[in-house]
Image (cartoon, rainbow, N blue to C red):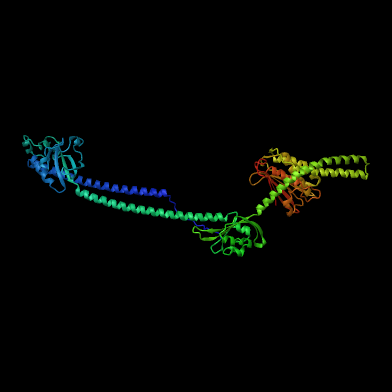
Length: 601
């Protein structure tokens, strides 16, 4: 069963944990700041209200003093009485008048007259005509007090007639009395009035407001924490769901794209998963096998693994030859095992199939290479032992041929012996060429120039056989590092092979070009008789030939030279229409450490 992940667009904002933690911190700071701001605002309102009350009280007292002094010739005693009566109002702790040095001249408590109320240094910054100042202090009885003070101003500014308004004529009659009130007439801004107000009711109200602010802030903070925690839980849920979805998609893509076949069964022993590689190996479609028992669709040899699996055995790889659909027999390596969850419960079986056809092909290639290496060593020894006697035979045949007259049968026989020795010597030379180690002398070479040079060597043979040569060169082809002499030999073998394939004439096309990877490549194409499909995989084998007079070593030498250059060669052929040999060079041709390759197909 293939896992199909629907293509849905999931819109979810990912909030990292550090952002949630940052949100908690910011929310806490905001709530605390709002609470502190609210407390400070209440304190400011209380201070403003008490300051206004004290200011109104001071003005009222100054007005009473002004009235008494103007109409009734009041002195310090009458002002003291007014001070005491005024201080009996609710919320007033005390009223006091001091001189500039802070000594009390009038007080709501007569016993405190003459004492120091405030140090003169503390009054030094108080300027005449300035607004009243306030401070929070504690009275002598220990009660908290809100104290407001400023210069005492019961006298109005001078009128149009130059006299001070607010003082009667009778004031002059008191010039001889020692009364502090006389200083009000003689010099302004000599006395300071203090009003002490009780703050207990306001403090109680403010504490209530603070308590309410703390409760509201705590509720807001808890709600904020709850909201952020809910967001964190939701984010964790989304992250977990997304991780599960991604893991599922990853697992699905991974097992679907595996280069090995994967077949899985469920708890009931029915096929639940069948990936693409399994389809390719078995030739079965997933719709044909899904939901069926393995015994219904798979070969008996695979299903024969079931008893071992039921015993809980996990098999390593076992190589089998299995016949699947349409009589298709495939060499496969099989790994079978059971799947159990963390609780040990059976979940299903898994079969992993690996197609061994390519492995078998590579093994055959390795065996072929080993045989060729052994054959090369043998050929070198045999050729060396045969060549010396051949030289003697050819010499003797030539000698006896010279003893016979022209046209005689004996002379003809001697000529046949010489020609056969030459043919045998040519075969031995090719055999030595094939067996000789490929010692290259690579150098940066222009392929187009190499083509011009090599084609001049076969130009006469082509003309003799009525073959047209078509050379097309790509000037963008880069220089490659090759052995020019050995590559010329390789090209000559391909040219001669193509010319011999066109017995009645034709066209030999040679092209230099760039392949899809930007590397240099060559193509040699003929219009000859072509190569049969069953022979394509054998044309590079030594001594394989379809020609009556061929040795079967020409293309084997071509392959050996290209292999030494780490170059590849492919063959395309259509019987009756012609053949194309394509050679591709790597950018580091001649220097690679990998073996060459060839494909025929």
